[in-house]
Image (cartoon, rainbow, N blue to C red; front, side, top):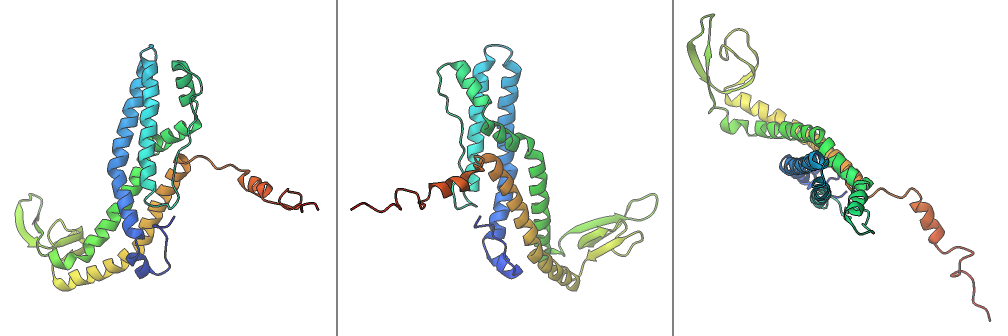
Length: 258
């Protein structure tokens, strides 16, 4: 993973592509993930309902094709973050006929891994991405607070009977039911430039360090997607590579005769 590489220096991390690539990757999932989830859910549920009839068998094959296409879209998003290509590996259909296509596609573990990512993990990943982005954008907005703190306008009430009692300009960082100086309030009411500058200074520090959380969230999301949308690694791959190298008994190491 190159574009989501963490750096020890918070300023260096801010100036690197990592937080911006992470923000774009998480933000895009809010839309692409939702569209892909809806497409796969619609295709699979429709095919499942109609599979009790012969008309549902072609729909099951179509649903598998839709799932594979949606998974390919997510793999394309991963290529923005990874240097190596993230590709899927599906079982080929080697026999003719509708039943052969149906059984080959729906007994393929790769298809079920696609469904796990596109359907089962949609809600947890959406919550993760939304929470990380919302906090990151809120802190970023706090940095610009001196530019706009005076424009928000709030009215407040005092007493049991209620009714408008006054108004004030500023930003509430807490709970102020009766205005900035009223009772039952807690937090900070930003209505002066020194307070806005102090909040902005705190947000600058928080922003520098929350970039690590944002990048970590994107790395977690991308790692889950890569694990499910890529073919599983062969556990004997390293051993096969060692056996395939020239050794003391290989033909490449045997000297030629006279």
